[in-house]
Length: 249
Ligand code: C5P
Image 1: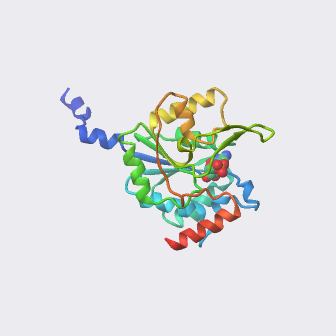
Image 2: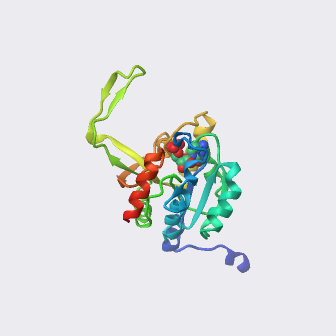
Image 3: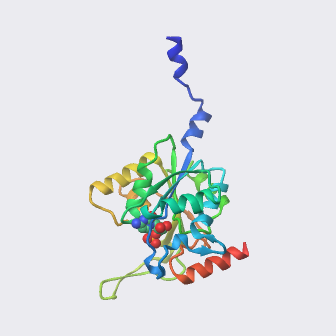
C-alpha cells in the first residue's frame, strides 16, 4: 500500500501552476509559398544569411518560457529541415518534425495531435513570421495565466470596409473595433485540440486563424497589442523589408 502511495504524486499549488503553464510551440511551416513566385517555399528562403524558418526558430530556442517546439513542414522537406535547420543551428528544443497537410488549418491540427506530453499551453506561431522576439513571446505566455485564450494583433489604422463579389461596399466597419490579427496565439492544450478536432469533423479546413475555431467553442478570446515589425513574409517585398528590419535590431 505504502509503495503504491509513493507513486501518487501530490502537487503543491506552485507545481500545479508550473505544469499548467508548461508551453509547447507549434510552428506551421508547411506552406508552398506560391505568392512568392519562386521554386523554394518562403520559409526556406535566405534572410540575411539564414533560412527564414531558422530565424523564427532562434527566438523560440532563446525564450525560457518555451519548453518544446513542434515543427510542421512539407513532407518532402523533413530531412532538409532536420539537417540544414535543426541540427545546423542546434535547435534542441525541437521535439518533433511533423509532416503538414493541405491547408494551414490541417497542418496546425496535425501538429497539435502529435503532442503526447503533459503541456498545459500551446503557442501557435507562423514559421514565416521571423521578426518575433523572445521577450514578446514571454509576455504573451504570461498573459495566458490570466486569460484562457490570448491572441495578438494590431488595431486598424485605415478604415476597413467589407465588400461583395462585385467589390461594392457592403459595410464600413467601426475602426476602433477592428484588429488585424497575427500570431503568436496561446491556448489551453485541451481547448485547441477540441477546437481543431471539432472543425475537422464538421468539414471545416480553411480557417486562416486558430482563434476563430476557439471562438466557435464559445471561449472568450483576449486580444493584446502585437508588433508592427512582426510581418508575415509573403511576397519578395516582405522578404526585403524583413531583412532591413533585422539589420536594424
Ligand atoms: O498560408 P499563409 O501564408 O497564411 O501561411 C501561414 C503559415 O502557415 C506559414 O508559416 C505556412 O508555411 C504555414 N502553412 C502550413 N501548411 C499549409 C499552408 C500554410 O503549415 N498547408
